[in-house]
Image 1 (cartoon, rainbow, N blue to C red):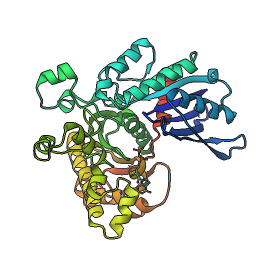
Image 2: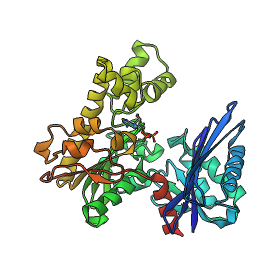
Image 3: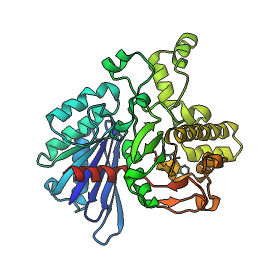
Image 4: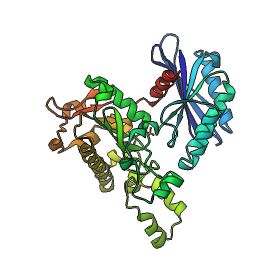
Length: 398
Ligand code: ADP
């Protein structure tokens, strides 16, 4: 059984084709710079002998339709997919499901309408996700299409945690509440962590830290999410590559009054020019670390602020959960940056969190434990795999 997963953004499309029986990713690719002068598609695949291959296509791609045509062509050229009808399903990542979509769904006209309805909550993401679904439905009309929502895993958060202390009508009229994002990743690593701990997923209490360009934390009680750091939008919570995370909500009004900035400018500032980039001029953690090692005090401060914010959330979620079985690090920074994991865990033994420095530094990939043998809270690194999780959820639905 083959399932194709599509993550369609405004100027890029990522995809991955899985053989669900062997759980192998047969081919994957990223096409970016749609609508710009020269688009680029980099496709990787396993050839018949099991060797890794890569091919790059560079050509103008005017719109998403042309993007999909190029992707289909590239996939056919690998010989791994001769016809769309070979697909058991196409799974689509959809960023926002609002309160309507709390589980993966088979896409029909009502679902498309429902996704359109929540566009105001994700104006940058949902329209691109919709474009991807509509084109895939045209190109592969006989193949079931499944939507998997980034917000869905957070639907179990209780109202006292997802509501803001704002007038009721803002929730009733405009849906102003915490939704949370990265749900597919938090869900995937939670299930993997439970496996690693040898407990059923429905029994496990975790704090999961998805630390990538965008970063978020989730508190998970008995396998279900009970709180998360991102809110109405992905801007709230942890310090991120270019997003500020938690700030005093009065700052935008202050900047509007004192600095004469428009709300559009402030929106841009908080989403694209803040976080690590705002603090030290670089949003890539590898670059920030290199500069910090060379004595750049702004870069050192960026790392200190990044870790301090995570520590505050660990403290808060420990209070929320009571019993924490494990702290789970995932995504680009969480999986690779041992120095961040060390700084986050440093001095948290009073919470039962004790990092084993050697295990933390070991260069191993794959899910692993990095806590000391007597740490009450186990510390895990679990590589995320959102594409596989989307494929798995699509298969379960079928
Ligand atoms: P995205 O949110 O775009 O999917 P990723 O999960 O790929 O992001 O994470 C990107 C972040 O991970 C970047 O800040 C990058 O610098 C960081 N990262 C990747 N590898 C390392 C590493 N070896 N050491 C430190 N940071 C790393």
